Image (cartoon, rainbow, N blue to C red; front, side, top):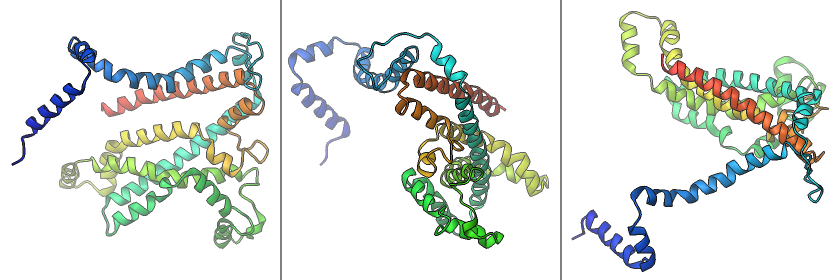
Length: 322
């Protein structure tokens, strides 16, 4: 006959108490429940502060100095707001910010439209929808390194499959254009890859929103003889809008930090056509070794993303409250 759960718990606690040294046991008995709770969570808080907060504070400090990582023994001097002024007055950095905004806008637009359309189709629960859902999610499960190398091979003008597909539908010779080597096509090559990889993520969030809409709302609309088009614009879109906005928020933050995919496909080229802000930051910090200036640039990017995200979250909360 097995012991009751309470008896087992009491025995375990008794064994733990016997194994605890007497000095520690005396100290623990004198602590309140709140003190014991803080005793358990303090190591986690300290770890989070060491990993997240301290590097941010250190970057803020370096942004006001002339520190260079390749000269650790050189005297560090404070330069005030000079690094911030140089960053904000640098034309190359503003070009990189415009390139980043171009990527963010088009990737979010394409991923939201395609992701919501796929979610809407899968929500119809047609035959085999579970299988196709799994197939659609495959790109999201792959490593960015694998995706980058895979698409770099597809974009090869001589042997890549992408050029032959375009040639099949348009009649343009496959070797007459190069996606990664063209100034006008390289940005779109990266947008296509990012859309292919992360549209399933948007689809999942939108699908969760569609599945959360109660069926009785559609049943009431059918009783009122509302058409399918009317139901879509009056019920589906408004009730799924908070989830769509949430997907846009997540993808916007991630795409603003886009780095690995651009480095794998173009490295910022041809020229500086696809050089986004993160690549410019990397070159400032680890090629020019302007650590103080790059820290100022990183803080500006952080403030920009944090400020825009905060405004967007307020708009999202207003939509939820409707």
